[in-house]
Length: 361
Image (cartoon, rainbow, N blue to C red):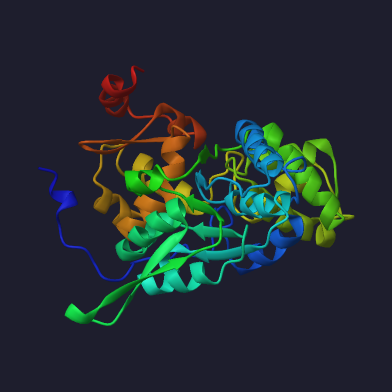
């Protein structure tokens, strides 16, 4: 048994809390305001996600040719990849209004019934984080998606009556970061499912150049490449880094962004060449310097960096694992050879031997 994983936990973090991370893919208030101006308006303008764009274009063109509403669409993928943007593009391509809500906001079937009953014909309903919707509302959604009808229960107990309510045809666009949590009956009712992939650096460069034009920021090819390489494959992070680099360029330089300006700005904001911020480096540093590269339990690692274990597990680890810098094993967290190289450290002899069986090094 790994006693470290079952020991008592403190209620309060013992060190700094990483609330405002520049490389967090979730949108904050500033992102929401700026993204409205930067969002592409149609599929031609949308950068990246070639397969999803091509398939979705066929779905929408066919629906327009039939004079019908588009099939229900499910978009899955990590935060910041463009799911909300695509939902707005779907509405624009179908010349339809859009209604935006989220799964956590729908806690009762009555909440969903109120939204559905007020939809116009052909309207697009965007339901973000659809996997977090309550079960009663989810079951009501089955009938609404398939038959464009809901049963409204009036009264309680033996005298309760179900009143059928006809709905106008509409298009539901569901977005989720955890498609595996959707029950099969709900997944099966979507006519089109698209999975959003992380962006390649070249695609992010195109995003950055487009955003720079809209923000009236001068940037050269190398400057865009420098920002793209630190953006974790996510357009939202790329746009956020661009705005911070723009601020630096306006104060410290002539306002034009090149590679040197971008690198200097992101050094100030503690985002390194691989997109790691100080929380990521704190986790890796503790794992390498204090525990010889592991294996070490999650709770011990969290205490070492002065954070709660949920923060380390849910905020820092996903990117470190995706980058091949950290591995989760039954014995605990283990650093890979790439982690030692990234921090410029030499693994101890016993650490190298211990990792040989895991990584073949």
